[in-house]
Image (cartoon, rainbow, N blue to C red; front, side, top):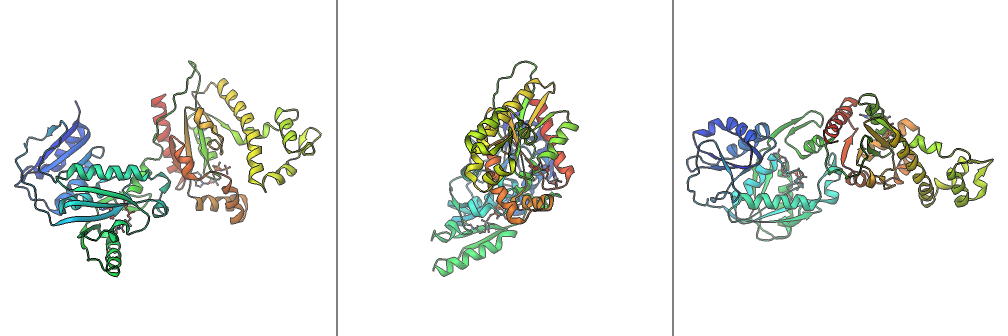
Amino acid sequence: MTSKYGLLVLNSKNVQKLKQLLTSAAASLSSRLYVRLNPDQPRSDELVSNIYLNSAHFCPNVDVRLLVKSRLPNEEYILIGEEAAEDLTEPAKRYKKVVLGGTFDRLHNGHKVLLNKAVELASEDVVVGVTEKDMILKKSLFEMIEPVELRINRVVEFVEDISGTAKCLAEPIIDPFGPSTRIEDLEAIVVSRETVKGADAVNKKRGEKGMSQLDVIIVELVEGNDEILKETKISSSSRRRADLGKLLRPVNNVPRRPGAPYVIGLAGGIASGKSHIGKYLKEKHGFEVIDCDKLAHTCYEPGSALIEKIAKHFGEDIVIDGLVDRKKLGAIVFSDKKKLRELSELVWPEVRERALSIAEKSTAKVVVIEAAALIEAGWHKSLAETWSVFVPAEEAVRRVVERDNLSEDQAKDRMSSQISNKERLDASNLTLCSLWKYEETRAQVDRAVEGLLKRI
Ligand SMILES: CC(C)(COP(=O)(O)OP(=O)(O)OC[C@H]1O[C@@H](n2cnc3c(N)ncnc32)[C@H](O)[C@@H]1O)[C@@H](O)C(=O)NCCC(=O)NCCS
Ligand SMILES: Nc1ncnc2c1ncn2[C@@H]1O[C@H](COP(=O)(O)OP(=O)(O)OP(=O)(O)O)[C@@H](O)[C@H]1O
């Protein structure tokens, strides 16, 4: 039987059995484990790191929180291990106000070590700057970073939950300084070994502004391992990567007649890997994949309703002997984004109708509608779910230059008529990234299919 919350009380004896206790927490808890140190077990930086590092290994799905306060958690909890909590006095704090900064995406155990340190030291305020906008654009898989409000709320909730008295004042930052060079009476800054230089920069700027110097408190990095991203510490990027191929937003509740296939969308910018993924879904998983790029060409057949609409909109001379003069039409739309949009608005409904009619007749269990502009066209709103594949813009440009023999500027121009990766991801239920080896792309797809087959 599992409970939501647990409490593990560590003393000088059972601390030796930490791994075993965390494994038992993983088996009996669905949400959160509070850890508290009894008076005979002194708190050291090494122990704090050890608790979080081992938590990442032995109970990775449990939100572990080392309490600094003397009070016990408010939630109803079960005891992990046999040790009961003894009375504690509130620990003495060295500073009133402590500052720290970070992105804090998918708050992980490395972040928690840092936040725990700040709470351990501050009696009044833990001031936190949380990066946004330009500050996050260079991070790997930045498009998947959670919204800043969510990251702020999570940090505040964590800090205030483990802290007895200190308040958490968190705000978005768009430079590496934020409140650290604005609030006069801060006393210390908490950083990790990798961000010490940032703390030095803060002190330099405070010095220039005539403000007091902050004590720099350094915590060691909590190790982790991600061979694909070549990370040797627990990191948010690695957590974002682990989210590829997982359902990140609930699916739409689209009515389906019994026996009808489950229809999903596959969107992605130019050279993002859609065709490769579509082919794999068809060959390995037996899904029916409708390539809307190809389908769009069939809409230009002589006598089709679309040709009439195009002639009406772009002029009768666009149609010669019942056929669209593609060269002429191309010259009009590729030099004018507004005209391209107008053409798309004529073509998309036709393609959609044909795609849905093919899907309706399919005997496959799952039908995939593969379309670059699926989200621009708004189809994702009426499909059960939409998957998006992306690569960073620089990689897409590199691929287009290589594959289509275009100049960099031409490649960028093609991309500019499409929405950004971020916009596409935000409108999708599941994300894939084809930046690494083909096996990695396929592993993400396999993960996505496994989840899909469980929910349909
Ligand atoms: C510019 C800053 C804020 C950007 O943060 P960053 O994008 O690196 O945030 P991220 O969420 O990745 O990490 C947040 C903090 O946790 C630390 N951290 C990350 N992973 C781990 C880990 N595995 N173990 C221990 N600490 C970790 C980081 O080193 C960083 O100090 C930061 O790097 C920095 O320079 N900090 C020092 C100056 C500062 O705090 N400025 C803002 C004050 S409001
Ligand atoms: N790991 C990978 N997974 C998928 N594609 C990759 C990978 N690495 C490189 N590529 C390359 O990316 C390019 C684009 O792939 P693909 O043709 O599947 O994209 P697409 O989204 O269908 O493109 P477009 O919409 O422009 O036709 C191909 O040249 C492919 O070989």
